[in-house]
Amino acid sequence: MPTKRPARRGRKSAYHHGDLRKALIDAGENELAANGIEGFTLRGCAKRAGVSHAAPAHHFKDANALLTALATLGFTRFAQAMRARQAKSSAEPRAQLVAAGLGYLDFALAHPALFRLMFGSRRPDFADAGLHAVAEESFAILVSAIARVRGRDPWGDPRAMEDVAASWALVHGIAMLTLAGSVAFQAALPKERWEHAVDAIIGRLVPPDAPRA
Amino acid sequence: MPTKRPARRGRKSAYHHGDLRKALIDAGENELAANGIEGFTLRGCAKRAGVSHAAPAHHFKDANALLTALATLGFTRFAQAMRARQAKSSAEPRAQLVAAGLGYLDFALAHPALFRLMFGSRRPDFADAGLHAVAEESFAILVSAIARVRGRDPWGDPRAMEDVAASWALVHGIAMLTLAGSVAFQAALPKERWEHAVDAIIGRLVPPDAPRA
DNA sequence: CGCTTTATCTTTCCACCGTCAAGTTATATT
DNA sequence: AATATAACTTGACGGTGGAAAGATAAAGCG
Image (spheres, rainbow over the protein chains, first blue to last red):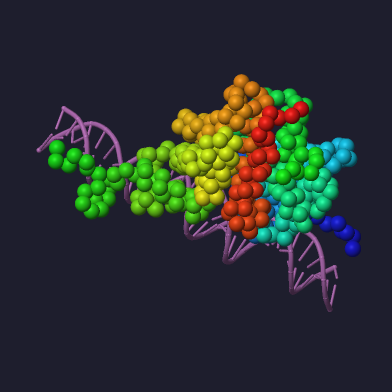
């Protein structure tokens, strides 16, 4: 077997792409960032990848199937962003929770189109096993952060699960409103000050000691 | 002048519709509720209104112009929903704030597609004067609710404006996550219990007395 | 090595979309 | 009554997603 790794030989052999699936996902990410989800086009992705408009059909049955793959990619990056912040933060439970929230915002601001695809669109198939799994994994980061703050598992404690919902909703709302341009002062604030404000808000929501009453 | 109010005479005179603009907005609302924003179609709206596919051009220069009108309608309903809750609630400032939040959620759950159009899409023209005005008006409800709780105008007090951002983001996040189906337990909870939880969460975020630290 | 099979990609086609241009009809004006 | 204007229809164009059929390269098998 001479040609052990066939694919692209020397130059643009062209007809067989090598790894079109990955190329389409890359292209799709660019397409999404450039045109937003409203302007997302399967043909545009194909053109970016340098193939004909019908080529994607062999790798994604649908335009929405490609968007599902993109959303899946988005959630893995999303989880990475939260973990990256946590790694750079103090191990103290509350600091870890705030770090997850800031990572959440890092991702939303860095990849707005992807974020809106993940949380604001119905085109991806959220019943897809891969997508569902990675979304659950992201959720789990927040749940375990709360668990460490509270000292008990939210899954068995409705009161702690309420904390999860509250802090998730809060951070999510900040992200959405910031992306929508509704929270104008965010752009006006220096990053340091902005992050401090977010910290303070989360702190108010999840008080350090056991919740009263 | 015999035919003082021309429009529709007796039966389906057809050619001149009477008030196609309004009919298109109604049709658009149905289209949006039926197909979601992803499946929204100008031709579909025209068909619902019983006119040809090019008729809307005389009343809306664009498909996005119709969506702008729909978003504007949405914001007026949105403000109404908040005020309706406030009217049925105690006049006590914190109760008024919570009522605004519950009205926010009432609207989001009752008109999910409209809500996502208003906050999760970029198709409406948010620079449009009418849309901008009614959106600002909705924002003002929240600002003044906070003002009454804090006893001072958030516009002049960054600390109070932080409360505005926080409570807005929180309620918005709850709405978005609920619509996305992420907050599963909401559907499982009885309405009474659910509203109580929302009340408690807002209460934690905006404590009754002046914020410590 | 040569033939066949298979997966990949291209070409062609269809239905539908938004938008534009031109034609038709009802209302308003004079 | 004649004309102008506004409302609507018809028809066409480019672009979209998707299906069908043909072309090509790689892989399997004699």
